[in-house]
Length: 324
Image 1 (cartoon, rainbow, N blue to C red):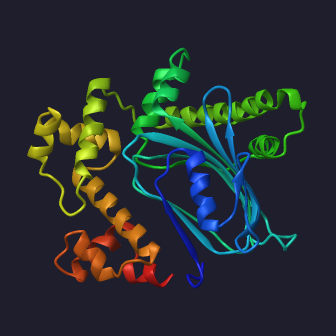
Image 2 (cartoon, helix red, strand yellow):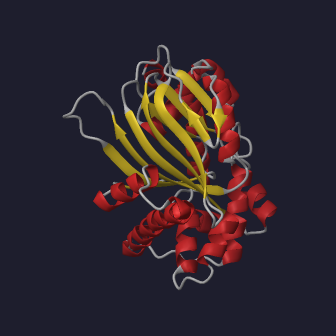
């Protein structure tokens, strides 16, 4: 994406109604009846709030992009997940252009989340916000509920991703363009959303079960490790020592090191360093900071040391990202 004339939108909203009101101020357009119609300078189409009877809040998108945009969700301390279903056609005017699509589970636990939308592309999307309380209630009576929940939390530091097949795409279209008896519209939409959720989680647990690694950690240890992860990334300038971290969460140093690696797939230092560089990359993409400013903010003595650390994580230099 050419960074000239790019609209950059940073947000930390959890509630989709609040988020659409925020977007309406940025786009200088009206938001009413849960629908935001994009003004022609930015796009053609709509973003829409959908609140279904079982308590899930969804954000629908169906629009063509007329302005290069970057959406960046910053880290939020309140834990939640977003299950996304996206279909993108990069050149809507080209009948031969093939759309790209994916279903993706993201977590508020893992730094900032950045979405690029390029002028001329066509977006169809559904975002389903899943809070911890809703997930616990939803899974408590399912035979595989505890196993699925454990896998979700253990994988919460990364994105879980899969391409969308024909059935995914048909269900997404049924949510975006419902053909139903209007008297049962919400019931119809809830049914389609839950079919998407059920399908994703079924595929998710099958993938996890097919992996040779068998992670077994008591719930108490998982909670302490989540607390350790929060403490670890509280200050991006310097990580606490293993001894300090272990004392704060009530674990021995050796147990913390072993269990942290088992849960997150990285050592304590590797995890901190990856989060630190994710923060740096988000700053670079925002175009609001120089490389020198970012290196100083993250506690590096000079740009060379920062660049070396950045390259180890992303296999590219900060100057490469800044020039994209």
